Amino acid sequence: MSGTRRRFFQDAAMFGAGFFASAKVLSAQEMQMSGDMPGMNMKGKKGSIHDHGSPVLVETPDVPNLPWRMDGNVKEFHLIAEPVKQEIVPGRVVDLWGYNGSAPGPTIQVTRGDRVRIIVDNHLPEATSMHWHGFDIPNDMDGSPGSSQDPIGPGGRFVYEFTLNQEGTYFYHSHMAMQEMMGMIGAFVMHPKEAYKPRVDKDFVIIMQEYAILPNIKVPNSMNMEFNWLTFNGKSGPANTPLIVRHGERVRIRLINLGMDHHPIHLHGHQFVITGTEGGRQPEATWGPGNTVLVGVAQARDVEFVANNPGDWMLHCHLPHHMMNQMSSMVGPMSRRNGMPAGLDMERGMGMLRQGNATSEENGPSLGRGLGVGSTAEQTMSNTPLKTGNPMQHQGMQMGKPDVSKDANSVPGFPQDAFMEGPMMAMDKMVDKPENFGLRPGWSGFMAGMMTFVRVLPQDKYDQIMELRKKKEGNKPMRMDMPGMEHKNE
Ligand SMILES: [Cu+2]
Image 1 (cartoon, protein in one colour):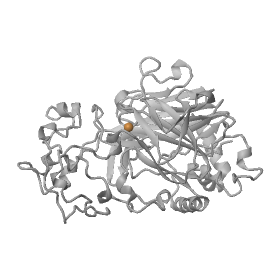
Image 2 (image 1 turned 60 degrees about the vertical axis):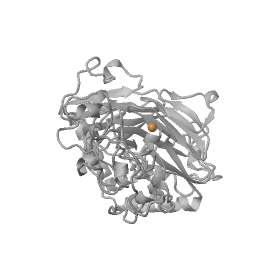
Image 3 (image 1 turned 90 degrees about the vertical axis):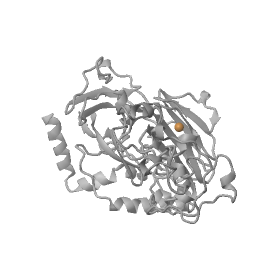
Image 4 (image 1 turned 180 degrees about the vertical axis):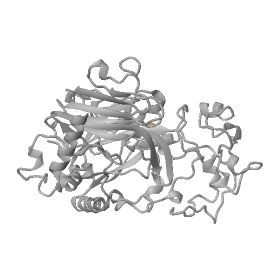
């Protein structure tokens, strides 16, 4: 270890004054952006990055890349299993478990043939174990607690080392089932030495997760079988960052699912082909067109398409309940009603827990069966006069009058449990970021759960967003909390 440490400081010293600049240039976004430099990959230009065979790096919106350092011929990474505060949507910060401050954990990228060392430190209050999902590696590196190694105790460390002769979309995750449900997964992309043909211009990773977190609780109930927070890369719509591509580019999206449900992921406006699974690249003869791909639990699916249709296109899970936020039976109608249902106070009216923890005897049974939001307080929904004229106000939200017909209250089924979506709940300003620039006003009111955009943009709009992104990154303070540092991907 002392040799490793010395080596790190030598490297840092070698970089000298250039250290900060180097680290900055090689941040994930910047590495991605280096492929966007004028003249680098403009169509028709010779000597562009496209003439080299190396694949583009993947971008995992809202999730950092894991930095690494070279130790001899070994690529060394450092993962820390730890509790994480994750803001799923503005104002909703929950307590998850993840890696290096992120849930999902940071994305690891290697090239086929790499010798890789991953130092795993356990900063959790209980034992963990790291499994390398789909890796062809020696058994004692597999991370199966009990059978291939002793679990890593709290405060403990395990050093994994192996050579990777695979290509594709893989992932790492805790092999403790309940820890998986707390967020403990990250992407592990193994690049081929030469890019596949046809070469993609953009390559994205999206990890799908789900949590059951009742309205006044911050910790997921990992026993639950139903989920009210559905995330792409740790964010629910409209808080997640859209995928930005140029009109005409070839795009790959790597979808990874670790949860209790399968997700049919649907892309608007385009047909794609499935080019890979959690087992690697699929032969071209198997590529059939589609626009919805079912990503089962523990599976990965790579889809590729040519972004030939300009516009802001939705990319989302098509399960209706996975396109919602904070689902719990009583909250939706509450927002539309005049006061509480008869006989209930505020907390019970909204289905909040009043005593005991989520798995306590009084709450456990109903929560175990479903969110149920304390099914004891569940009521039949009949029509109730719709509150008009005085819509609820939330700071930062654009609350308007609901757009409903005059006879709405006489229509069976109205209002729907989740009648909170729509223009009433727009929060464009709260989720403002370069990648959202130029979306239609009010767009955010219709995005929830596993929903994001693939924005297929003409050159000028694309450049504009890249410019905004660069400015925003320039303002960010350097994060120096990693024990390693980024080196250029040779
Ligand atoms: Cu889904």
